[in-house]
Each structure stands twice: as C-alpha cells, then as structure tokens.
Length: 217
Ligand code: ACO
Image 1 (cartoon, rainbow, N blue to C red):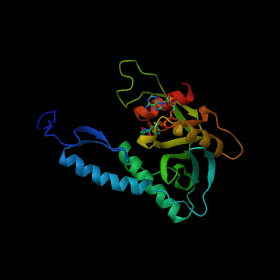
Image 2: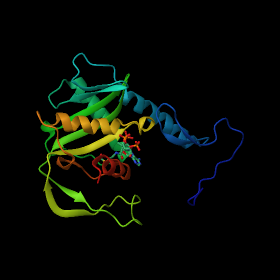
Image 3: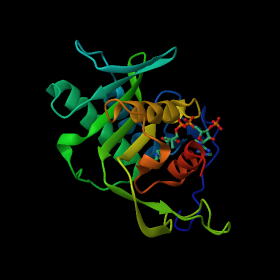
Image 4: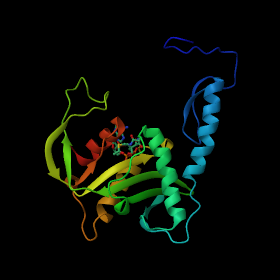
C-alpha cells in the first residue's frame, strides 16, 4: 500500500480481483476486507432503497413489456415522497452530487421506471425558463473531463432534467430514452416537448453521451 497501486495477494480465494455484485451492481475488490465491508453496507442500503412494493394509487404514465413509469408529484402521499427521497439519495451518492435544493420544489416531477419490484430508473424534472447550450469540445478533452464549456447565450427552454439515472445492471436497455420520451409527453399538458425545449443540468460524462445521442447534437 502507500503509492497509487493496491496489491492483492492471491491466496487461492474463491473470488479474486475486481468483481461486480450481480444484485446491487457495485464494483469492488473481493478479497479486500475493507472493500467487502463497504460492499455489504452499500448492498443492503441500495437494495432497500430501490425496493418498490407497489402503491394503492400509482400514477402510471407509461407501460412497457419490461416495466412501467410512475410519476410522483410534490403533493403525493408521504410513502411516495419518501421513496423518491430515498432513490434520490442513492442517485446523488453515485453521482457525487452535493445536497441540492430544487429551484421550485413544488413543481418538481419525478419519474420512476419500475421493473417488477424495483426502481431501476429515475428522472427528476423541473420547470426552467432558459438553458445554455454545451459547446463541442476539442477531441483531446472529450469525455475525460466534466468541465464542459457552455455558450453564454441563453436559449429558451421549458423542462430542466436535474437528474437522470439508471441502475447499473439495467443500462443500455433504453430505459433513459423511455424516461425522457415520457417527460416530453407529460411535462406540459397537451404538448410533446421538442428536444430544444428540454435541458440536462450539469451532465456527467455518461449523461453527456446519452444526451448527445438522444438529442442528435
Ligand atoms: N456511452 C455511450 N453512449 C451511451 C451511453 C454511454 N455510457 N449511455 C447511453 N448512450 C447512448 C447510446 O447511443 C444509447 O443507445 P444504444 O444503447 O442503442 O447504443 C442511447 O444513448 C440510449 O441509451 P439508454 O439505453 O436509453 O441509456 P441508459 O438507460 O443506459 O441510461 C444513463 C443512460 C442515465 C446516462 C446511465 O448511463 C446512468 O445512469 N449513468 C450514471 C448516472 C449518470 O451519469 N447520469 C447522468 C447524470 S447528468 C444529469 O442527471 C442531468
């Protein structure tokens, strides 16, 4: 230990090296006691956080062969709000987001993608008035930094996506795409928002790759 490299002794353990837990998706070093403890702690908290037992009154806004999307609004019953808070906490932990207070908490709309008995996707949207377009980066800096350059010219927008997250083991199954399609359909009654009217706030590298593909920009 000490330097950048962490050495692990191969003493014939059952699991060796980097492993991904097949239930919670955490990547850790089995055989490293500290990592194993961290995994156990994360495992229970995470699976409890994404557990979805079903609600008496669910606002189902889209249904698919592999799941459904439930919309939660600020004045919904406390069990629904609590689930949204728990999921957001897990998402923020994974994204490394600091505690952020939404600009208009009473106008926030949360979309949960439910597969069987788990929340496997979450999108938090809020009304905005303007957004700043991300400028394309020179190829050398692409994808490795999170400090995107933005235009300083505001453009009108309607819906800000403050969080979009899909459970690690469920990625690349078009869950994020379906969440955004549903937001565009449900955010403003009676109209389908164009991709110019939605904006992703402070995207991560994954978020930027997804948004670029989704919006064809
Ligand atoms: N790398 C390259 N292209 C990608 C990636 C990626 N990591 N993710 C999505 N895309 C592109 C692909 O073209 C994909 O289509 P394909 O699979 O047919 O090639 C297309 O976007 C649609 O992808 P989905 O399957 O709908 O995306 P997914 O359900 O996997 O969710 C997400 C994408 C939400 C970014 C997921 O990777 C994730 O949760 N990452 C960790 C959390 C995160 O970084 N969220 C964004 C934060 S920014 C914000 O919240 C505003």
